Length: 278
Figure (cartoon, rainbow, N blue to C red):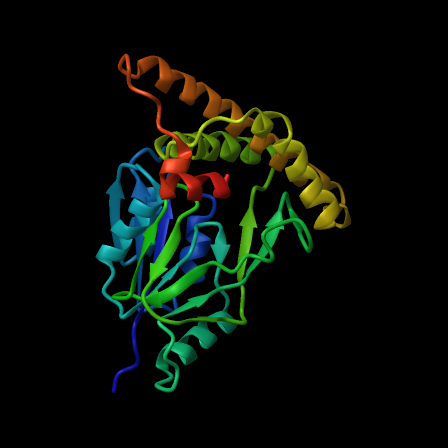
């Protein structure tokens, strides 16, 4: 019996500095599928066309839709989702080959540990090194949901790989600030669409809480100056998201038809989930 095939899925926008190395690190896969955001302004598409097996250009609406579009293009029995700034390793490739080929394992998906290099420093406390996203799963068993911090809705049991993805993210403050601007816009829109009301404490207290949680409780101070900057900018991200949430909420209230009461978060399960995620 032939070994199960693995398709690597990548969505990318303005990732010319990362995509080539990411694709080279996944040459072990049966196929590599790249969906390029139509708004990319650099050589991302050229690199994808040169190195990937399947390439498509799609206008961005949300992250789950981009990833599901890539999923629809894949033909492997298993799919492995990788971001352009992440690197697979030979050790990880060997582990993936082993788990997908083992007839004794009934898992339909696997969580993958992440090891972060943030602002040029390998983090041990306040980065994403404790994340275990579900990245490897059978193509017929799952799909992505969520507008911003998308997750995989999977039918079946889930295991965990031991070999991590290397995540080289946010090389400098400029990149961090650009990501804050992009993600907070999407997050604020998702909150408004879910009917979550703006709360003053999200503007006043939450940014401080985010900093304290990362810097003190997760011991981000042990990640040096880069850790301090990461924790500060994470607090800034919470503040900017609250500002945008307030602006969008006020705009929605002004545009609501007369006599129509704005949506209440306690009436909607989706709203409650979005509020907890915030």
